[in-house]
Image (cartoon, one colour):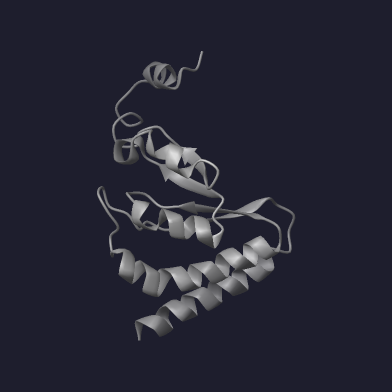
Length: 139
């Protein structure tokens, strides 16, 4: 039953992509939240069984039109980051330094571009604009 459920969601998303991809833009951002603070919500095996095959179809449709693929997911999704790169992901958003640290970015260099890098848990909700500029070294 769950396989059919995910298949129907994918089919509908592919229909929407057929319409959207008729327009001139650079890429598509997909949004899901697969991660918790320390690991995937559903575990890698479940993600690979239910999410990955359908997501790959959507990524492939976008890539076939020569467009970039971006993916939003909060939380720690290190367990599937290589899968996403292999599937054609170009941009990962939201990179949370409180989860990954900045050294992890080096592992993704040349594979996936990172969108993010400022703490949405500690810095953005708690600091002043001046403090945020200092963190980002914006003058």
